[in-house]
Length: 86
Image (cartoon, rainbow, N blue to C red; front, side):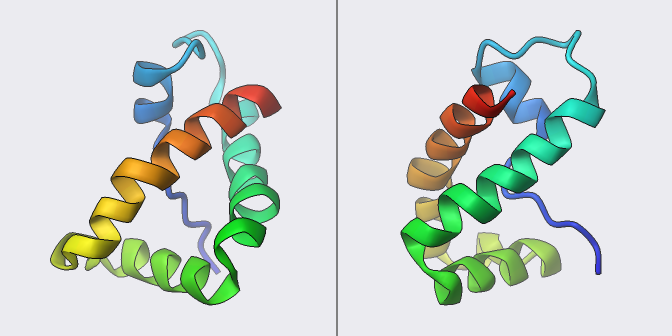
């Protein structure tokens, strides 16, 4: 199964104190852990899996509500959680 990330490395580096010198080999596991251990317990497995499916198949932009949730709540949460994990 392919790894799906709700936060891109580009977004992380542009919007946090993590700079371009931090290697992907450190960032990707931190994103994955932050999603699985940080976000999923908060929003629940059903919503988490729905978001992951929508991101994977590219339909997240078709749903205004899910896109808003991702942009306004999940991305800021993950920015802070990943930065703390790194």
